[in-house]
Length: 552
Ligand code: NA7
Image 1 (cartoon, rainbow, N blue to C red):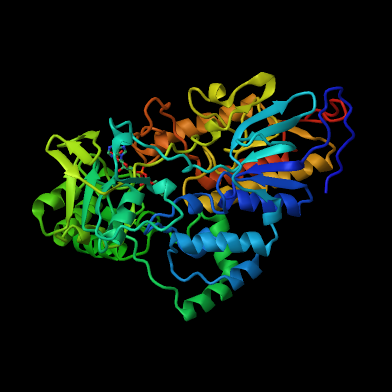
Image 2: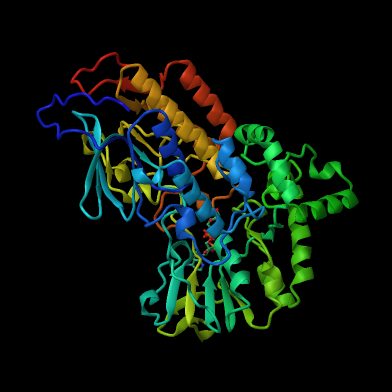
């Protein structure tokens, strides 16, 4: 453990509770907790929920599951852990992931560092001592040298401002805050509002038990089959034998997936070859439809249109009612312009007479009433309304934590025009504060990108300690340059401005790209540069003994 220097400042409030205080017990927070402790720091973690899992704790709606392959999403830092945990399915369902994360926490004895039901309401940097004071909603204070917010990108559910939402007398749930107690939907009249990944996952899973299911769709999405399957015992063996090779690919590939990239362009092939290839894609698992599709499918309008035309024919072939099929075909964006959902039985579900689709572009929701949902077509009554209406992506949780840095600067003010970061881990004016897995962090398989970040942060803190410093703050040049790279690259990103990756789904939110548009290659390159030149992008100082020794 790190030795804490004796307090020398008159107003020093005493010993620290931990060297490293982490907020959030999701995939990234658990990883960071483990690494920081392994590096010899004293650690503590605060979590708003009453259990481990983060996104995989809150999103416990029926049908919630990975669309990255389970073993590619899981931790790779321990071969023993990998060997002993057998994922049951290629794309695990939420309960399995929650069990896995609990297993990790117990296996590595991390739970004793965690406090649950502890929502952070303020986090304040004390400049003379270079420490953070964090207050939770029960008034408890914790002081630490370093504060690492692993608060996730999909943590703050978004409810649209529809008049009357509170008037509804039935049950009303957001997919991102699904109750822990089982929800009995048997014979209930259920509405699902929203057709992003969550809406299209839950609908086909509950359809058999409900009396009726009405899907309220504002924009159709390009949904393609997830093609999930159990992992056979042979495959389990292969995964273990191939662990090193798999880790190598996952730790280095651009998007953090295993799917091999395709170097062919759509029009290198004949029409017949193209259709056969698209059929292979349609039958391929999850994100391979982006990663292994024609190299130009996301970048060439003609190639994209061909793939969309193929999906269109599939939808028309599956959905028997032509009017419904037509509504389910996106008209306002190409494949990959928004984050594409992956589905099981979604289009097929619309052939069930108890399922109906309301096109909100034709008949918008006017209000929620005590008994149901009112559109221009009148009121439809429901027992349950499921809000699958998304999240305040990227910055939502960070900006609700009351973070204040140097000179009392509030993060909400610093980021009033959108986030500015270096490597998606730090921002100027907030020394000793990190936010892996936040804005500018990922652009692919999240745990892989976020893992790169927590590894970098841990090395940065260890070398800070080794060099006799205790304060680290990114300089404005590095921050400006990384943020400019993100903004420039946003224009070349396949994601359009209508995507929530630009914050467009939240009224009043600045329209700024929230992913890392340089991808992993850029992240790796910058990290290597930073580590090769002794962290010149950062200002590193020693504050705790009152000195200001050896800047940089
Ligand atoms: P998404 O993908 O943000 O989807 C939200 C859905 O809610 C989308 O269909 C929205 O329609 C719809 N929405 C939003 N506001 C309204 C209003 N006012 N009326 C009707 N419909 C509305 O969130 P998800 O939870 O599905 O997925 C989030 C991520 O979780 C996903 O990308 C994966 O990474 C896992 P819109 O398209 O905006 O017209």
